[in-house]
Length: 261
Image (cartoon, rainbow, N blue to C red; front, side, top):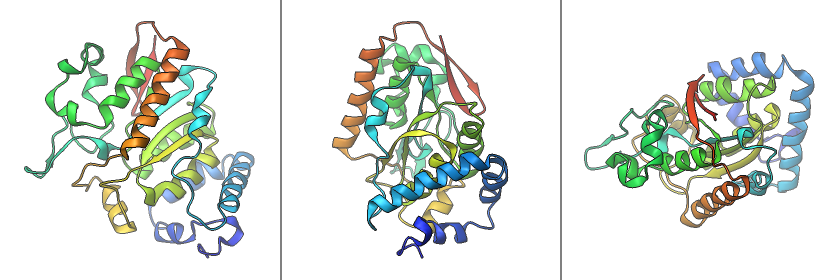
């Protein structure tokens, strides 16, 4: 059914494989069924994306240019994956100062260190894919969320968005395997933005994705060089347009670092 995009839907296999998992039912009852009009509109948006793809996999970017003209910096959420944290292959373990499978970032916990410049960052942070995005978030006064499990993403991002109690624009970094179900989640939650797929270290099948979903990820993920530079340049351009010069602080709320000036 996925190959034929039955009912303009290409998540039949993914749905069946996860039908016994908690996040499937949690999102169904707490988002889709609780807000049926928004859910129907989102399913239609997703179906339109599938139809326009003409059988090809959905693009790695929902639309990077949608982030080019936002109504306000506080409306933006930057969301890297926890697997972008630094990993020491010789020691075979994560070297993130605050741990691997969590929503925390030392640089946002101690924003003064972040703002003093990269030479003042802890050594592991200089090898981290999350850290440069945290730096851009501070410059933009954007909210910041390190993605871990599907359940947490549903609780912390999708469901609040369906209730219009969180940001409605996002920049998300994830493995190509999960791009399509993630697009479905964003469409039904009413969140716009861009999805950036990893080129190295990413989960390539359902078993790998399932292990990573519970923190079993012995690898660091990376975005292709050219795309990575495009993303950083887009965020830098936004900083120049917004002229976010005010002092900024963050507080950690429902796993999200929320910007407060």
